[in-house]
Image (cartoon, rainbow, N blue to C red; front, side):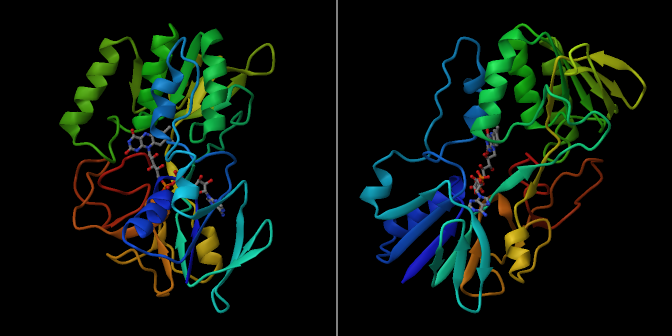
Length: 309
Ligand SMILES: Cc1cc2nc3c(=O)[nH]c(=O)nc-3n(C[C@H](O)[C@H](O)[C@H](O)COP(=O)(O)OP(=O)(O)OC[C@H]3O[C@@H](n4cnc5c(N)ncnc54)[C@H](O)[C@@H]3O)c2cc1C
């Protein structure tokens, strides 16, 4: 028996751990395209960015986990294609046969495509590499503009304030964290951030970025025409599920890999879990407009418990 798990994040490692805890004795392979020991993402927008903090990523499991639990970690290896008829995963290095395949491929950041969006100094925050770049840039940054008042944007705003930066947040919607929180809670968070000195601009999206004297980002121009000086920009406008590998393999996707209540796809040998999965949800999510449910499946950008989408 062989289980292949694609993705070495929270979901993938939890699957491996639980299989062993529940007594599964077959082979377990975890395919992880990021190099190094799999790490926790939540601290990357919190303690990791604190002033005078020496960056130290928190591993999801200790180094001995893989040997102790007989889990083979293929780090720095990407899954490229699935042959469901042959139950085979093609990797950047060779291939693996499976009896059960688990997608735990997570999500990636949504990108902006407005003018100037690729100027140096404009960052995202998802991976350890992203966090390292921000950690290095924050001590010398002065004027920070954040696009998106979701959890990531507002956590980064707090971190930037702690570095003594001037912080402006542009949010297209009329309240922060609208996909996840009720209006009352959103207003509470807006007031809390403003009281700490964040210039939170609601109902104001990004129109374009303009270069400064050094060809790095110099200003963010909003949809109202207002121009905000910016030597560092964080884009936190949500995520989209990594579901292309699954759709290329003929599996149904809809804001994530479509699974049932037991996380199975229509193929009984294939499952999906975590940010890449779109699963039935009994609870409607608070909509950005606050008028009611917008979807009854939970994926990374439409979920009831984790609003980072
Ligand atoms: C900065 C930050 C702060 C957060 N803070 C919180 C918080 O406070 N509370 C909370 O509940 N949630 C938080 N989250 C969200 C939480 O981290 C995610 O929900 C969680 O990481 C999802 O786990 P996952 O395993 O599904 O996906 P991921 O963590 O995205 O892991 C998926 C992994 O699969 C890999 N992968 C993808 N495709 C392939 C492939 N083809 N081959 C091999 N590997 C592949 C990816 O590189 C990635 O390493 C935060 C997220 C971020 C980015």
